[in-house]
Image (tube, rainbow, N blue to C red; front, side, top):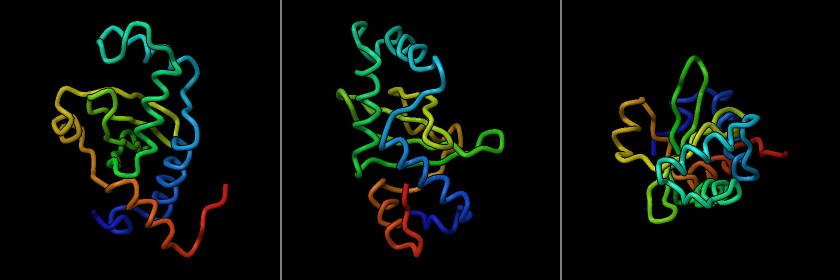
Length: 143
């Protein structure tokens, strides 16, 4: 794992942790974007045509809850976004979310490594490593 304090400022680390805790607590979408993303995943056969928002959110939630899954960060238009890489329904998925844990998208790329590399994602480490890092900090999180 890259030492998180070597690549992110204290403010950026705090934002990453806040977003991670948020998405692990509750899946939140921008207004109306949940259904648009679900319909796209149905059209692309990533989820069944009968899948509901609850089904889609469950995939996201389960991936975010698995401490062995991998966390990435990337910057776009001066804003940090985060991705969790993990498996659901026998496919490798990426969960991409922004500040405060607000969902951007979730999908199973055809080539996960290619997708991550092309867009400049930076590996942070396993979720459990990031959570352990937070426990080692002097300031404990309270929400």
